[in-house]
Image 1 (cartoon, rainbow, N blue to C red):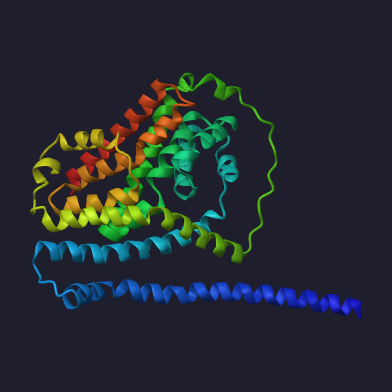
Image 2: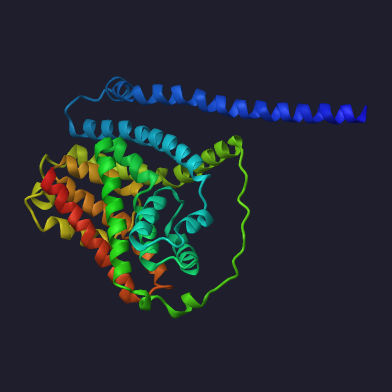
Length: 357
């Protein structure tokens, strides 16, 4: 009797777990058509709000700005929610330990490519720059490969990709990812070739903790869905205010700045606009959520794509707080080389885009 009771209890527990998994998968399946319906109806809803509810006349500066704001904010947040959820699930298959293990023992150029690619899907922020750097150095990963990762991770993240896709289309988003990868791979390769290890603080190479085998967490599909939702709450919860503020500034520029006003300042005919935009962008600090909507508005007023992308990449990829944090483990010569090499790469991308578009 006891054995039967235990078997029955285990069967019920397993059945409940299966039902829970089915419920969560079902919720995801239900979420998708609702998301698609909302996304496809945004234009009509915005027109209804602006022209019917608010009774705002067409072809006025304020109407243009309000329409831009009401349409773009939910559009970007919807895209961000979906992509962050998917990327959050994908990231459950990676960890810093797995990333480090994947890069150990790789030759320079192959390692640069792998590190840059892994940087896209690995959680990273400026505050984790030092722990990641120390972990990579401790594992014997070459300096150039480490920098490829540190460059790619913040520059090519899901927020930037979602915003670029939502505001500019998939072609620009794809080009941005490809150019970001090229910059990360090339810059890391150059840093590795120059043998700049002597400009790493001496104490970094003295850290040698014993190798500990880490048992990877076994995750169910339920766990991965939960992690995806946690990623949505964390990422969207942090950046929504920057998205709203960035789109608000963009709406003002979109509605009130005259057409082609930026052509003389950030146009392709002004050759100096690319290096100037990089120099202006380096000391600034913003994330993709805050800067991309403003860049979109500038493009609408005559700024060239290459100049605007160079400005955006310098703001996101050459974060001043990250360089200040890295000062604890790097000497100023290496930080200057890092900023200079990445800055030159960004300028080359800007000139290429201006020549193509």
